[in-house]
Image (cartoon, rainbow over all chains, first blue to last red; front, top):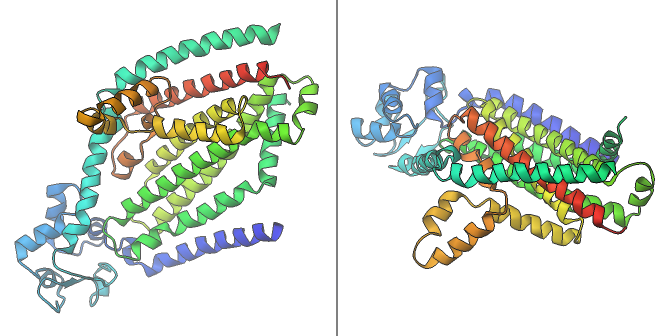
Length: 164
Length: 255
């Protein structure tokens, strides 16, 4: 078992080292998180930043881009060549542009699909935050108050037993 | 040294001997590589997904460990006959339970701290930025594990470890149902009866959903300090209640 422990610790340390080393291999360490990549590099066109300011959610930027520039508009802003209409590539030919991703090719409308669930979850999380639950003061406060009384009574009773 | 602290140290040593920390280390490695897994697919918002999945794993780990450790602590000593020589010394049963529980809390707290820091490190290195707020749900998971562990300890004073674990599982599932789920899905039409039953049962059990702050934290919501303090106090009163009940039940037990 001692050997297993040593191996596991080595794996842990190795993973840490690999993660630290991988930092250099992932430009801006952001991948497709456009909001941060753009902020960090300042590359990426004004449309992106407008998208962020307008929504505050992070994820609408592509919809705005498509609307603003038309299908396949991304390649113009970044100076890429889009192989097909509606398909854009990130960071393939402009590594100096802040590493705008990992070279994935997206189909038309894909971004909306991948962003939407996250936005939906964000909205759900906002409305389901426990402190926004109007029923909570009623259902929790009386329970907590009663519990504190029961705790005190039980403690007093047990205390008498302990000292007897 | 106080008997409670001696017993707590004994529990920690025993946990190390049972190799429980190996599970923690395995999970820590997983935490470290989580962002890589999600980023490898070029997912948008991968840091949120990483936080979400990481915190969910941590929460499940805490619940699993609470059910396992809480329900086996006392029966284990009874089974191995190590309880009797202990209680033959001038140690009260309450001190024994407190020592066990304190040791359990230290083990859980240390494990969760390691895992939380692993997640934070992974987010800092491979993610976009490290959000220290992820440690809030981690700390509340420890509190939740404390409540659940205290309940399992109480249940194990009068039933078998397996049944204590099942009861703890039931408590966690019913107590953790989000209020919004009850409001929207168990309050109208055909589900009214089920809703009424769930509400009635939940009157007498801890509402774990009060401690579930994962989703708001993942999506960058700021948690009001007053709420946080109230949630911690709520968890603590339940924990104290279950510990006192455990002592009450254990004192009555004929060993």
